[in-house]
Image (tube, rainbow, N blue to C red):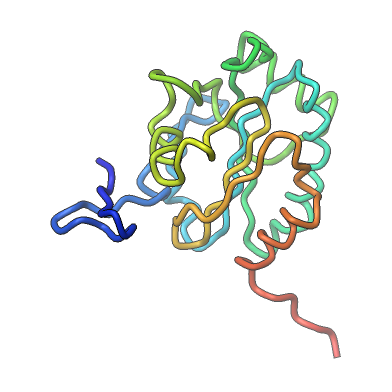
Amino acid sequence: MFTFFSAGGRAAPGATQVNAHDFSFKSMDGEQLPLSLYRGKAIMIVNTASRCGFTKQYSALQEVWQQYRDRGLIVLGVPSGDFGNQELATEKQIKNFCSVNFNIDFPMTEKTSVSGENAHEFYKWARDSLGGIARPRWNFHKYLIDPRGNLVDWFSSPTSPTSTKVRSAIESFLPQRQSLR
């Protein structure tokens, strides 16, 4: 169920509030992966593809994951063949490709549709929440979710996960590092 907004952006009377924690994916290993598991953490959800010009962003995603995971960031890869059919056929192939080529250890979902009528419900909600401008138009589109489950930002495919813009957005939702005195 989705939240219905009035023209002013506030929930319409009687509407059910929905946030990212209300959605669930299936993990690469076929297990349920409810986003509510990550309550209290920031989440970057990225639709990925193994045979894309942006595939090198896997390295940047792994770098961001390693840098911020101890402060509460989850990077969640969502393999999809929606754009140019650039994803491998099976989860086993995808997992092997990510491991061998990029040493990926952040969570990944099973191959999932992210656009059009067959899009996963999270992606439909994100599109409806942020407007058509924020929908994935290609592989490696990124959504940022705050620790309360609010969808707070998006970044287009060409925007590197290690860019100043993305890092600043991530850091705004993470606890500050403790200084060593």
